[in-house]
Amino acid sequence: MKIATWNVNSVRSRMEHLQKWLGYFSPDLVCLQETKVVDEDFPREPLEELGYHCTVAGQKSYNGVAILSREPVSDVTVGLAHLGDDHVLNSQKRLIAATVGDLRIISAYFPNGEALDSDKFKFKLQFLQELRTYFNHFHKADEKIILCGDFNICPDSRDLYNPEERGDNIFASPQEREALEHLRAFGFTDLFRHYHDEAERYSWWDYRGGMFWKGLGMRLDHIWATGPVVASATGCDIDERPRRWKKPSDHTVCWAELKG
Image 1 (spheres, rainbow, N blue to C red):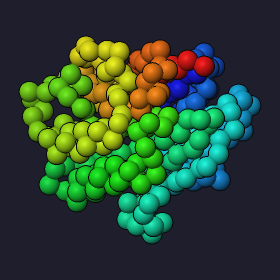
Image 2 (image 1 turned 90 degrees about the vertical axis):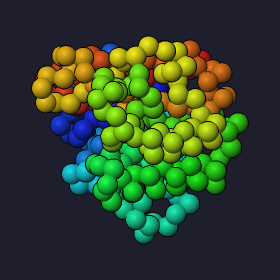
Image 3 (image 1 turned 180 degrees about the vertical axis):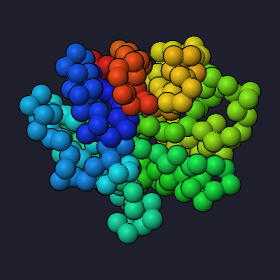
Image 4 (image 1 turned 60 degrees about the vertical axis):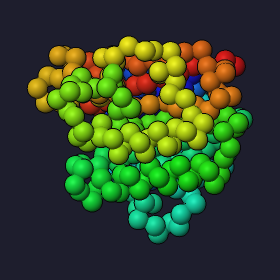
């Protein structure tokens, strides 16, 4: 089974790229973030023609998450389901979960946070705390779970090109990393790091200044798995090719492969 995650930065703008990538990689499950489209306008038809069931939670112009699956999904939930629909953390479409076979798959778009002294940063930390509570409430670490998406955090200095210069700024602050580690301690393994120790492997590059071509980026996109999934995993990597295409998303694809 091939599983992938991709912040497409507008699914309609990136539809040609998505179709191209699905065509050559042929994943079984794909988690998308920043779809930026309301559910009724999500471009289902071309994806269904490729054999995918589309499970979506979107909003106009911002945020939005989706799961594409070759197999039918069940038990779909949107948002931090232990909180009420009217909770401020559920005012933005950032989380969708579904079951495929015996696997629970979650597509997540973590808040950016903007700056450490902003209300958006407080929102980000609250989201991370409540996401851990969400897993405590609904799941156990011995279940087959994959959490993937754009986490908007670099877990350590290997994951960004300028750790000394960046210091404690957004995406790499001690507060964010501590909150992320608290989430990971539920029982998750970073699958990329399970297979790769090296630095300078990134999934996001700023559009400005030719950062991609200079090799200056961050690893903000992740695939995390619980123990039973790790035991069946055979690989995990980053596919940089979509970032080279004309008018790309600023993120590229992360993928993992499981036995069976």
